Image (cartoon, rainbow, N blue to C red; front, side):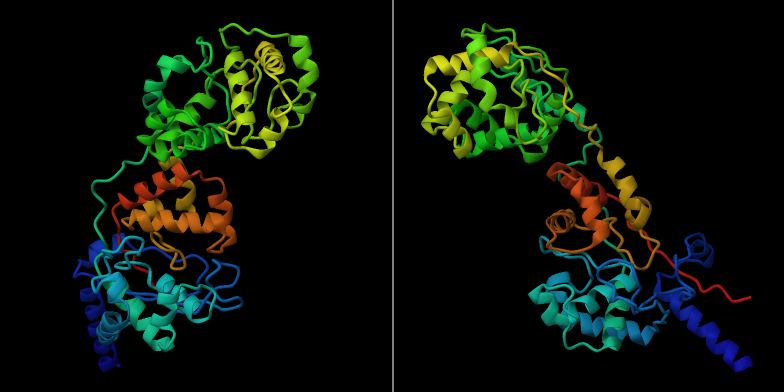
Amino acid sequence: MARRTERRRRATKRQIDLIGRRSLKTILRKLSCATGMAATATLGTIFASGAAAQPASISPGAELRPLYATVDDIADGRRLAESSCASCHDANGISSVSGIPNLAGQRPSYLYLEMKAYQEGRRDIGAMTNAVKFLSDDALVKVAAYYASLDPAQPAAGGPNPVSDPLQAGKVAAASCAGCHGEKGVSSTSGIPSLAGLYPQYLVAAMKAYRSGQRKHDLMKALMAAVRDTDMNNIAQFYAARKPARAQSAAPGNREAGKAAAAACAGCHGAEGISATPATPSLAGQDAQYLAVALRDYKSGSRSDETMRGLASPLDNKAMQDLAAFYAALEPQEPNVPKPLSAEEWAQRCNRCHGQNGNSTDPRYPALAAQRADYLDKVLHAYKTRERRSPEMAAMSDGLADADIENLAAYYARQKARAVVFVTIPSK
């Protein structure tokens, strides 16, 4: 009995040394229990064969089970990692390659489960599949143990800061637009559109169309060339939240004649010029001269849209002015657009699974803190497009705009990564 106790004492000491020679008092402050598990590993790393009804990478019907990693296992894992993984993830687990994740300090069960997913074809990236396809289950455990034992990356420095208030950021970015579109987004200049109360999806698409040249306007193209996608989204959110009003410029044309002609437009733009579709602009209260010019541009093809070109082609200049006068006289309405969330507010939702500030305490979910921002951006887009499959992540990512994804990635990349230790609770 005494010998067995001594062996256990020495093994525990080795594992304490492994996780950084922290004092036992410091370790105990960081202890947490893994949810949904009957048992977990002691003062070290956890591995699992899977879990039912959990993330998509876990084999259906499998059960979690604790395994223990020794110092020798870690050494074997290092040798395997250097030969199979280091070319992409680096031997220290801190990637220097764009779009490739850091593995140092990652939750070992998650690493193990992801490698199993590549082996079993549930995830398919050629380089990863080739790297792990011939590794035994024991080898996967050791590789996961090695990377989990390393000190995690430091929080990212430099690069874009996550936006704490998208509306305030949009107001700042839109300052240069006020000279033409009005301080509150309501035009007082003939030929210049009002922006207040338009759906952000439409405004972003319009700005990108000017930038790409799909919409022909030299000044707008030059202005948009210097605007980042994130700033476009913030500008659009800012204007969508402004109270709309009728444009203050003159509206030549016959309103009654325009009302009759507008019947063909109601299907997309609404009977009263209020669109119910985020990608389609509301026309009520819009500057009349701007509307007439837009119709001429669709007819000539200088604005590229086959549906609008077909509708505008039979119209002469008088009919275009009549239509514009009808819509300019209508009362605009505020769109039903929810207030945009900051990176911190989005992160509160993500933290339910991924832990406070992205430091996961559930071995099945990856830690996000101090992860590469470009990798997080890529993965969130992959979930949103269903290139990478997970019912939970699909539901989360569907509500994220591109700017939200960029903000979230920057937010988590700047968080301090922390090790998490799991303990076995003795049965009563």
